[in-house]
Image (tube, rainbow, N blue to C red; front, top):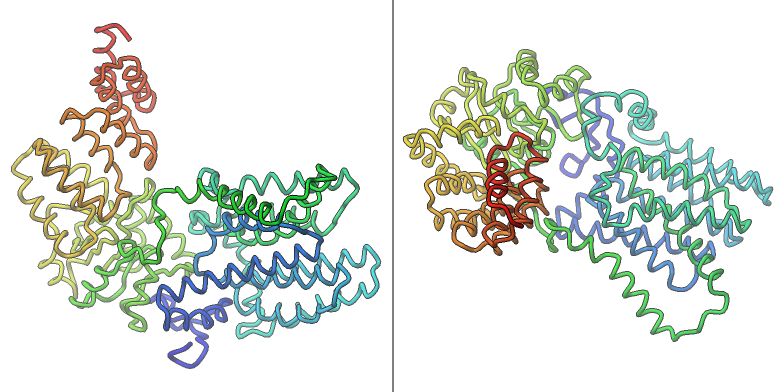
Length: 611
């Protein structure tokens, strides 16, 4: 929009859908956001997050005041709600939508409390929402609920909100894409949500309760109904609160993408309800000085965030996680004229578009909006989870190259399928991406010159390579040479360093393995088995207590595994604590009943006796 000085009405972001009519309900958000990025870069994007978050909770606080919440209780409630909200505060259209939602709530609650009636402002807000995000219907729902409450309570001017609702609905159609933009949330609910590709997107599924355990979401989900029931028992019934609580709680439980909306809607009601409950519990509270009360609330606000802020993997700062984007892979594509009909996972698409647009034949197959036909979306998802899927989708499109995410999840089969396909050659890889090109055709010379002949990219082939290297020492030199090449081609080479550390461990070169693992940690301390290997080195060097600390880190970050439990048992055995060693071996066997090393270690302890 900013470079073409026009609103794109045709699709320009993926090569299969290029030139087809486009529907983009978030165009207004994108137009507003671009100057923040263009002029401020990463800091500009963070400024957007700060402004929108402060605005959303600022207007929510104002709505709480209109409801009657007083004192410092709203500050504590904001701290809890914002802690939960932050998982949805990435730079996305809903960061603007929650501001519009909070403004609407403030206007409606001001009116309901008998203050100035500024409800006509709801109409342009509804128009702005319809032009910035497909969640526009939430604003219409909000107006409708307050209008129904007015009618049920027979307040003066009750029909005014009903007319404003009609106006807000009508003006929502005034957008560049008309009814097609407004239809998208209903199309998703009725049709798209049943497609496999959408069912496998985490944010479209229920919340991950283990992830949300520290941030207060369970407290909000349980606390809001509890306070509503308390008010009901004290004959304080707010129909709007009941309707919003039921609607937004249900949405959030079905799809975590609604958690941000939930926290902003809940905040004013929670503030009012908690204020009332505390006042009822202590009818004549001692009047502490304001400074003392403010200090106590500040400490409470800080305390609720302590556990969430300790979550590993989220260091403070403003930075791009470079190793998460296919930067060097795209530079390889640019340097060696890799173009044509490409395959990608949609998580790779944004950087590819950013780097190559508007060069159609370097754009992705699928973008983050899952653009394309239903058949392509189904085949795309089939290729992720089934070895036959890659062959099927390649027969349909005859791809020239594939740019794939290097981090491979348990159900992901695509890297394994490309490793096994002799028609393609792996020509570039780092921690972010793996690039394959077809051996025949326009990229044959690239395939011949840059193909990796020993080290694959997928977990399945890497596991087999590890077993072969353990049996055949003659492979170790060629494998190390290819790992060295990967290290020199990209600064994000934690995987290659990790595999070189395994080679050092294989020949019991503990000092070199330690140096390599230190390099891995500096690049990516999320690497699986990183701390387990640190612990094993400490164990063989006679430092079992340090080894136990490393094993604890491994289990904290990657969960319990039979291998980690076996290593822990050996550390306890080295310290002479047979009871804890025996318990660790048993946990290993519980995780993997066929783990022979754990069974042998347990049997050896049992023969020794004692505790």
